[in-house]
Image 1 (cartoon, rainbow, N blue to C red):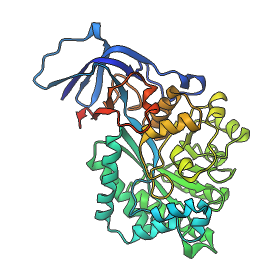
Image 2 (image 1 turned 180 degrees about the vertical axis):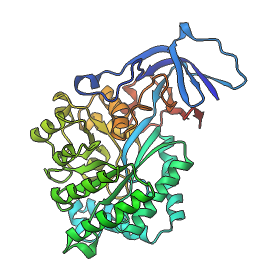
Image 3 (image 1 turned 90 degrees about the horizontal axis):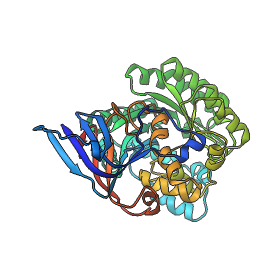
Image 4 (image 1 turned 60 degrees about the vertical axis):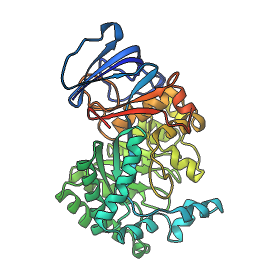
Length: 413
């Protein structure tokens, strides 16, 4: 298939020389082109330019789209989700309203352990069907690449079940999908008095099985207060690295846990949540290739402190944004809404927010070489907005559906 998009009001995030990520003051800049055209051939971006250079193409396979008054953007990349889960946890929503904290709900057997119980009772086929409903939802909202974690199994059988579902999603949808093994998401109730024994299960039983079936690109650990400590985290990361899985870390959501420093030490691709981040963590990140990733939906839903995105950017760091789509603390994968949260709560400019949900979040899931911007040779994952005035209107109109046309891997959906 060939697609020629003409009369584009503004083509955003264009690059002649593709970048891996954007950091510091450069995050406030979004390269763009007004009155533009974009040519897609097969599944790749083939060319683009100003309308006065638009080619006259003739092909039986060519589709022309008139984008007068509309913007064209690269699809969102959501680098942190738990989108494969069973059931929902709206009862805990009421508990939160009554004032119970995330930790208090977890201690009562809710939270992650509740999701693990529901997942254990759900077949692989049913889990896939439930997850596909959420996959279709995020595609309709502009997401073109997604990282999906396990972590609601907490035993070898159910963790493998989750990862097999993620593999099926990768094989049956147009999304670019990365898979992360998160067996170290919480301690099962039977290991509450012997936590290191569960760490041994993750290392000696789960990781070898995951690797044998080639089910995960990355390994993750919830390194935080009340969950896995730094020593346990490092043991798990070292084992994952041995089997070819690069680390990603849940870090510093509940306290200054040392998780960010552990992530940097083991060359984690990203450290995520990071509400409790200060000068020592920023200094560590500045000396690394690790992407600090904020999850505005979770902080909003749990009424937690905002990660210091402004401070990190002003220090010269890059920042990525992901949805943390999950049943307990961020039940949405709407990345446009995450941009709005970033602007209002984290004081990020719309341009910074767009960089955070495209090129930087692509980096945070290891795919910025193929998606995250408009560049010749990159995968044609993009969307065309409805007629809107400018980029700022996207996060400004936080409750509006502003997407007109979605193109993934060169196909109009």
